[in-house]
Length: 252
Ligand code: ADP
Ligand code: MG
Image (cartoon, rainbow, N blue to C red; front, side):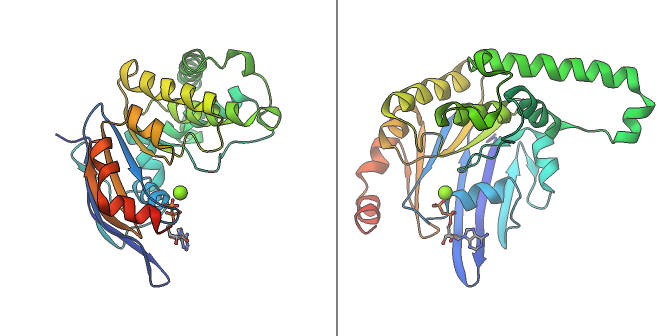
Protein backbone atom coordinates (compact mmCIF):
# COMPACT_ATOMS: atom_id res chain seq x y z
CA UNK A 1 0.00 0.00 0.00
CA UNK A 2 1.18 3.51 -0.81
CA UNK A 3 2.12 5.62 2.22
CA UNK A 4 0.60 8.72 0.63
CA UNK A 5 -2.05 8.95 -2.07
CA UNK A 6 -2.87 12.33 -3.58
CA UNK A 7 -5.93 12.11 -5.81
CA UNK A 8 -7.13 14.90 -8.13
CA UNK A 9 -5.98 17.59 -5.70
CA UNK A 10 -7.04 21.15 -6.56
CA UNK A 11 -7.11 24.65 -5.09
CA UNK A 12 -7.62 28.09 -6.63
CA UNK A 13 -6.72 31.55 -5.35
CA UNK A 14 -8.87 34.34 -6.74
CA UNK A 15 -9.67 32.38 -9.90
CA UNK A 16 -6.06 31.22 -10.44
CA UNK A 17 -5.80 27.44 -10.30
CA UNK A 18 -2.61 27.09 -8.25
CA UNK A 19 -3.02 23.29 -8.06
CA UNK A 20 -5.17 21.79 -10.78
CA UNK A 21 -6.06 18.09 -10.64
CA UNK A 22 -2.74 16.73 -9.33
CA UNK A 23 -2.49 13.00 -8.54
CA UNK A 24 0.46 10.93 -7.37
CA UNK A 25 1.40 8.29 -4.80
CA UNK A 26 4.43 8.08 -2.55
CA UNK A 27 5.57 4.55 -1.74
CA UNK A 28 7.02 3.56 1.65
CA UNK A 29 10.76 4.27 1.81
CA UNK A 30 11.08 6.21 -1.42
CA UNK A 31 12.35 9.70 -2.14
CA UNK A 32 9.72 11.34 -4.35
CA UNK A 33 10.48 14.79 -5.75
CA UNK A 34 8.25 17.47 -7.26
CA UNK A 35 9.97 19.80 -9.72
CA UNK A 36 8.68 22.70 -11.78
CA UNK A 37 9.19 26.38 -12.58
CA UNK A 38 8.55 29.09 -9.97
CA UNK A 39 4.87 29.53 -9.22
CA UNK A 40 4.04 26.01 -10.49
CA UNK A 41 2.16 25.16 -7.28
CA UNK A 42 4.78 23.00 -5.57
CA UNK A 43 4.70 24.66 -2.13
CA UNK A 44 0.92 24.84 -2.39
CA UNK A 45 0.82 21.03 -2.75
CA UNK A 46 2.80 20.83 0.53
CA UNK A 47 0.44 23.33 2.16
CA UNK A 48 -2.49 21.16 1.11
CA UNK A 49 -0.93 17.93 2.39
CA UNK A 50 0.02 19.52 5.73
CA UNK A 51 -3.47 21.04 5.76
CA UNK A 52 -2.42 24.67 6.08
CA UNK A 53 -4.74 25.07 3.09
CA UNK A 54 -8.11 23.43 2.55
CA UNK A 55 -8.33 21.73 -0.86
CA UNK A 56 -11.26 22.73 -3.06
CA UNK A 57 -11.27 19.28 -4.62
CA UNK A 58 -9.61 15.89 -4.39
CA UNK A 59 -8.48 13.56 -1.65
CA UNK A 60 -5.35 12.94 0.43
CA UNK A 61 -4.88 9.49 1.96
CA UNK A 62 -2.04 8.78 4.40
CA UNK A 63 -1.36 5.19 5.43
CA UNK A 64 -4.83 4.16 4.29
CA UNK A 65 -6.60 6.96 6.18
CA UNK A 66 -8.40 9.86 4.52
CA UNK A 67 -6.76 13.01 5.96
CA UNK A 68 -8.30 15.50 3.52
CA UNK A 69 -10.38 17.26 6.17
CA UNK A 70 -8.22 16.72 9.27
CA UNK A 71 -6.88 19.79 11.09
CA UNK A 72 -3.15 20.57 10.70
CA UNK A 73 -2.17 19.48 14.24
CA UNK A 74 -3.69 16.03 13.70
CA UNK A 75 -1.60 15.65 10.54
CA UNK A 76 1.59 16.15 12.56
CA UNK A 77 0.38 13.64 15.14
CA UNK A 78 -0.13 11.03 12.43
CA UNK A 79 3.53 11.21 11.45
CA UNK A 80 3.83 13.78 8.67
CA UNK A 81 6.41 16.53 9.25
CA UNK A 82 7.55 19.32 6.96
CA UNK A 83 10.11 22.03 6.44
CA UNK A 84 9.31 25.42 4.97
CA UNK A 85 10.89 27.01 1.90
CA UNK A 86 11.50 30.09 4.04
CA UNK A 87 12.93 28.69 7.26
CA UNK A 88 10.37 28.88 10.08
CA UNK A 89 12.35 28.70 13.31
CA UNK A 90 12.21 30.80 16.48
CA UNK A 91 15.22 33.09 15.95
CA UNK A 92 15.66 34.05 19.59
CA UNK A 93 15.52 30.48 20.91
CA UNK A 94 18.31 27.92 20.87
CA UNK A 95 18.55 24.95 18.52
CA UNK A 96 17.58 22.65 21.41
CA UNK A 97 14.54 24.77 22.30
CA UNK A 98 13.38 24.83 18.67
CA UNK A 99 13.64 21.05 18.46
CA UNK A 100 11.72 20.57 21.72
CA UNK A 101 8.98 22.80 20.27
CA UNK A 102 9.01 20.61 17.14
CA UNK A 103 8.70 17.57 19.38
CA UNK A 104 5.59 19.03 20.98
CA UNK A 105 3.87 18.98 17.60
CA UNK A 106 3.09 15.39 18.61
CA UNK A 107 1.59 16.38 21.94
CA UNK A 108 -1.62 14.47 22.63
CA UNK A 109 -2.63 15.77 26.07
CA UNK A 110 -3.96 19.12 27.25
CA UNK A 111 -2.24 21.22 29.94
CA UNK A 112 -4.82 20.35 32.60
CA UNK A 113 -4.32 16.65 31.96
CA UNK A 114 -0.59 17.35 32.29
CA UNK A 115 -1.16 18.93 35.74
CA UNK A 116 -3.11 15.89 36.90
CA UNK A 117 -0.43 13.48 35.79
CA UNK A 118 2.81 15.31 36.61
CA UNK A 119 5.06 12.25 37.07
CA UNK A 120 3.91 10.94 33.72
CA UNK A 121 4.58 14.33 32.19
CA UNK A 122 8.12 14.37 33.59
CA UNK A 123 8.75 10.96 32.07
CA UNK A 124 7.39 12.26 28.78
CA UNK A 125 9.70 15.31 29.00
CA UNK A 126 12.71 13.03 29.46
CA UNK A 127 11.60 11.05 26.43
CA UNK A 128 11.22 14.26 24.36
CA UNK A 129 14.71 15.29 25.40
CA UNK A 130 16.15 11.86 24.48
CA UNK A 131 14.61 11.89 20.98
CA UNK A 132 15.75 15.48 20.36
CA UNK A 133 19.32 14.62 21.43
CA UNK A 134 19.24 11.69 19.00
CA UNK A 135 18.24 14.02 16.17
CA UNK A 136 21.03 16.44 17.14
CA UNK A 137 23.55 13.58 16.99
CA UNK A 138 22.13 12.24 13.73
CA UNK A 139 22.47 15.59 11.91
CA UNK A 140 25.77 16.39 13.70
CA UNK A 141 24.40 19.56 15.26
CA UNK A 142 25.92 19.08 18.76
CA UNK A 143 28.22 22.10 18.38
CA UNK A 144 25.15 24.32 17.86
CA UNK A 145 22.82 22.79 20.46
CA UNK A 146 22.68 25.81 22.78
CA UNK A 147 23.25 28.54 20.19
CA UNK A 148 20.48 30.96 19.22
CA UNK A 149 19.10 30.44 15.71
CA UNK A 150 19.62 34.13 14.84
CA UNK A 151 23.43 33.79 15.00
CA UNK A 152 23.75 30.63 12.92
CA UNK A 153 24.99 30.45 9.31
CA UNK A 154 22.21 29.93 6.75
CA UNK A 155 23.32 26.37 5.90
CA UNK A 156 23.12 25.34 9.56
CA UNK A 157 19.66 26.91 9.91
CA UNK A 158 18.47 24.85 6.91
CA UNK A 159 19.67 21.74 8.73
CA UNK A 160 18.01 22.79 12.01
CA UNK A 161 14.76 23.23 10.07
CA UNK A 162 15.06 19.57 9.05
CA UNK A 163 16.03 18.59 12.61
CA UNK A 164 12.87 20.31 13.91
CA UNK A 165 10.79 18.21 11.52
CA UNK A 166 12.63 15.00 12.49
CA UNK A 167 12.03 15.68 16.19
CA UNK A 168 8.37 14.75 15.78
CA UNK A 169 9.53 11.26 14.66
CA UNK A 170 7.68 11.40 11.34
CA UNK A 171 7.17 8.54 8.92
CA UNK A 172 6.89 10.98 6.02
CA UNK A 173 8.96 14.16 5.80
CA UNK A 174 8.14 16.96 3.36
CA UNK A 175 11.21 19.00 2.40
CA UNK A 176 10.49 22.26 0.58
CA UNK A 177 13.64 23.22 -1.38
CA UNK A 178 16.20 21.84 1.10
CA UNK A 179 19.11 23.01 -1.09
CA UNK A 180 17.90 26.51 -1.93
CA UNK A 181 20.49 29.11 -0.96
CA UNK A 182 23.14 26.47 -0.22
CA UNK A 183 26.64 26.39 -1.73
CA UNK A 184 27.67 23.53 -4.03
CA UNK A 185 29.46 21.88 -1.12
CA UNK A 186 26.51 22.32 1.25
CA UNK A 187 24.20 20.89 -1.44
CA UNK A 188 26.41 17.77 -1.60
CA UNK A 189 26.08 17.44 2.18
CA UNK A 190 22.31 17.87 1.90
CA UNK A 191 22.23 14.94 -0.56
CA UNK A 192 24.02 12.84 2.08
CA UNK A 193 21.50 13.83 4.76
CA UNK A 194 18.57 12.95 2.51
CA UNK A 195 20.12 9.58 1.67
CA UNK A 196 20.79 8.95 5.38
CA UNK A 197 17.19 9.81 6.27
CA UNK A 198 15.98 7.32 3.68
CA UNK A 199 18.49 4.54 4.41
CA UNK A 200 19.33 4.87 8.12
CA UNK A 201 16.03 6.22 9.47
CA UNK A 202 13.83 4.37 6.96
CA UNK A 203 11.98 7.61 6.29
CA UNK A 204 9.83 8.31 3.27
CA UNK A 205 10.75 11.65 1.73
CA UNK A 206 8.56 13.95 -0.36
CA UNK A 207 10.66 16.83 -1.63
CA UNK A 208 10.39 19.96 -3.74
CA UNK A 209 13.73 20.96 -5.24
CA UNK A 210 15.22 23.00 -8.08
CA UNK A 211 18.79 21.71 -8.06
CA UNK A 212 18.62 18.97 -10.71
CA UNK A 213 21.94 17.37 -9.72
CA UNK A 214 20.54 16.83 -6.23
CA UNK A 215 17.17 15.70 -7.61
CA UNK A 216 18.75 13.10 -9.95
CA UNK A 217 21.04 11.82 -7.25
CA UNK A 218 18.55 11.19 -4.45
CA UNK A 219 15.13 10.78 -6.08
CA UNK A 220 13.53 7.44 -6.86
CA UNK A 221 10.74 9.15 -8.80
CA UNK A 222 10.03 12.67 -9.97
CA UNK A 223 6.80 14.52 -10.78
CA UNK A 224 7.12 17.63 -12.94
CA UNK A 225 4.39 20.26 -12.67
CA UNK A 226 3.78 23.61 -14.37
CA UNK A 227 0.98 26.09 -13.78
CA UNK A 228 -0.57 23.71 -11.27
CA UNK A 229 -0.85 20.83 -13.73
CA UNK A 230 1.10 17.56 -14.04
CA UNK A 231 3.59 17.34 -16.95
CA UNK A 232 5.51 14.11 -16.43
CA UNK A 233 6.07 11.41 -13.83
CA UNK A 234 8.85 8.83 -13.78
CA UNK A 235 12.52 8.22 -13.07
CA UNK A 236 14.60 11.42 -12.77
CA UNK A 237 16.32 10.87 -16.18
CA UNK A 238 12.99 10.15 -17.90
CA UNK A 239 11.36 13.29 -16.53
CA UNK A 240 14.37 15.51 -17.33
CA UNK A 241 14.34 14.28 -20.94
CA UNK A 242 10.58 14.81 -21.39
CA UNK A 243 9.90 17.43 -24.11
CA UNK A 244 6.99 18.94 -22.11
CA UNK A 245 9.29 19.45 -19.13
CA UNK A 246 12.06 20.99 -21.22
CA UNK A 247 9.56 23.36 -22.81
CA UNK A 248 8.11 24.43 -19.43
CA UNK A 249 11.60 25.34 -18.19
CA UNK A 250 12.60 27.15 -21.39
CA UNK A 251 9.38 29.15 -21.33
CA UNK A 252 10.20 30.45 -17.85
P1 ADP B 1 5.98 27.15 -6.22
O1 ADP B 1 6.22 26.65 -4.85
O2 ADP B 1 5.86 26.06 -7.24
O3 ADP B 1 7.00 28.16 -6.66
P2 ADP B 1 3.54 28.18 -5.07
O4 ADP B 1 2.87 26.91 -4.72
O5 ADP B 1 4.17 28.93 -3.96
O6 ADP B 1 4.59 27.91 -6.24
O7 ADP B 1 2.50 29.15 -5.76
C1 ADP B 1 1.67 28.74 -6.84
C2 ADP B 1 0.72 29.85 -7.19
O8 ADP B 1 -0.25 30.01 -6.17
C3 ADP B 1 1.39 31.20 -7.36
O9 ADP B 1 0.76 31.88 -8.41
C4 ADP B 1 1.14 31.86 -6.03
O10 ADP B 1 1.13 33.26 -6.16
C5 ADP B 1 -0.24 31.33 -5.67
N1 ADP B 1 -0.46 31.26 -4.23
C6 ADP B 1 0.11 30.40 -3.36
N2 ADP B 1 -0.35 30.60 -2.12
C7 ADP B 1 -1.24 31.60 -2.21
C8 ADP B 1 -2.08 32.28 -1.25
N3 ADP B 1 -2.07 31.94 0.05
N4 ADP B 1 -2.87 33.27 -1.70
C9 ADP B 1 -2.89 33.62 -3.01
N5 ADP B 1 -2.14 33.02 -3.95
C10 ADP B 1 -1.33 32.03 -3.56
MG1 MG C 1 7.71 27.02 -3.51
